[in-house]
Amino acid sequence: MSAKPVRRAGRKKNVAPKARAQSPVRIQVPGVDFAPHIDELLKLAGVTSTPDARIILEGYLSLAWAGWDYERENKGRIPTELLKTLENSIRKTQVVLRRIKKYPLWQRFHFLSCPAGEGTVSLPPIAPDGMIAGINIDRMLDKLLREVARSKRRRARPRDEGKRDMVDYACNFFHEHSTAKITTYPGGQFAIFCRRFHEVITGEHLDLDGLQAQIRKTVATLHSRFKSLEKPDLNLRPD
Image (cartoon, rainbow, N blue to C red; front, side):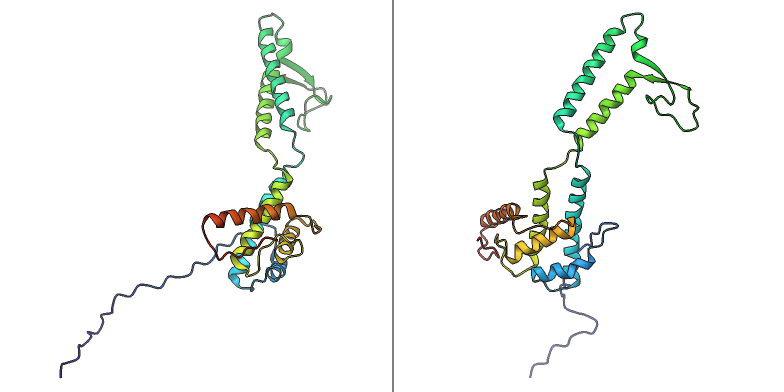
């Protein structure tokens, strides 16, 4: 009989280490608590309440809230056309002021003296009424131009674009975690989830047609994207 091979103690076969599942990164908005709504939203999506699912849903809510809050802060901004008109007028005024410098009395139009308390210039409360403050018109116009430039950069997005972003975040979570069909039907599970997702963020109650335009666009985008990837087992169904 042949002797059985003896394995030496202390030596192990090369075994590939098991890949550890990576935990989702928690995204939170300071001062905003979505916890009271998480269970309800998971139930609407038909998703089991697990720690990972809760963290991921909270992350999507936080991202959507940040976009909505930015849009809310930018409401009431001055129209771009009006800002351009103001900018052009300031630049024309600066050109005229430079031409005036050729004349002996040019300083009358470049430096103004205003008494404190009469409304033209604001001074600290400790400044006595009647105190004279000098205003450099050139510097003031330069500062005004910089403020116009800042205002032009901080443009508000269209309201529909903000709604579309919320539907996209809701759709991402629904598609990744729910086994329900993604449809455009207003009374369907996906549309109900999207409306409640939107309501949790904004506090605004929507009727059945409140997000339908954005839902149709999002579902159409999903269909075209996955069709190009040739994935036949999509959890998508148009209505």
